[in-house]
Length: 359
Ligand SMILES: C[S@@+](CC[C@H](N)C(=O)[O-])C[C@H]1O[C@@H](n2cnc3c(N)ncnc32)[C@H](O)[C@@H]1O
Image 1: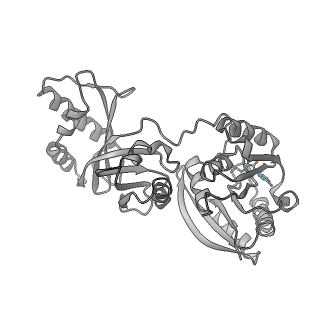
Image 2 (image 1 turned 90 degrees about the vertical axis):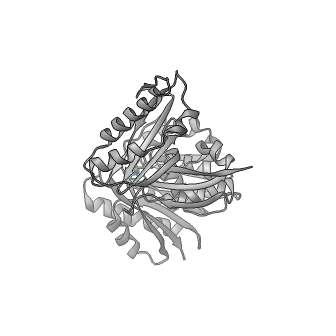
Image 3 (image 1 turned 120 degrees about the horizontal axis):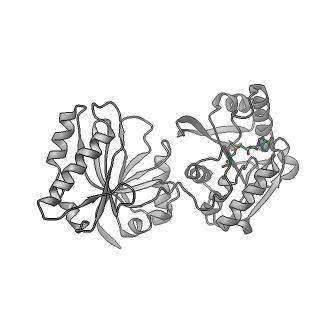
């Protein structure tokens, strides 16, 4: 099913933009005509995807690596001064809104701004809101601006020297997963958990056994089940309260028939896990565990265990902000090499995803 080329602005975790494109291609085939990251900084978390696939537009909520999605109406360059903003807003063609607005439509204008500008995102939203109200007044329609529960959301983002005017396509953040009935204080962003599973790069049509030996509330195993629909997952945590909580989430997600959960120590992984095809995990990084030596020892011991349980050629995907600790733990094992390192941003903190391979 083909239609005219549409431009979509998709937001994700800064650092995994390429994986969004890969997920689209895995799910919908070769439908991305073009894509580019938005902004001049390396970490952006925004990409513009051009596609003519109606299927993609209809099924955006099936993507696990995106947070929000917008239809791009217009984009261009913008300066730092308030008069540059006014000039761009005054020139905007708002007639596209005619297709979406009736006398009863409520509308919100939102804005995200990144970079150095003389104006704020509030200035942007206010100025654009005023112009939209004026535009409809001249057409005899009185539009209601409602920020709480609007029918449509117009977004005007300014990222460094670029602006993007868009229409929000999904009304909720896709980061919020309904299966999270048990909350872990250090739970991973589910978008990242899904992306990490993708980084194993295993065949989604085959059966694998994949383990998260420090599973917390089970986010990685659940997202793994969504990606590898034929695979079995083992989740373990040293704290049985987390295991119980993870079980609740796993049940709520409807994947309990493919997940085995147990209370166990990752430092003795080889005692309870054999024949595992891959590992995806998010070890503690020291918020509660204050002693750096303890953490260093933990990293050393679980890396040693990983090298013991993985068969040759298999991968382990590990995320941590403790890059130095990982590197020094890796120096001690001879058969695990770093295939890829990806820097991502999680809650304002930079973390590294290590993709390891057993030689
Ligand atoms: C960063 S949290 C994982 C969060 C998880 N990805 C989630 O989304 O909920 C790290 C987890 O490792 C567990 N842990 C710490 N030391 C461990 C060990 N030696 N063996 C197994 N689990 C351990 C902690 O109890 C904690 O739940």
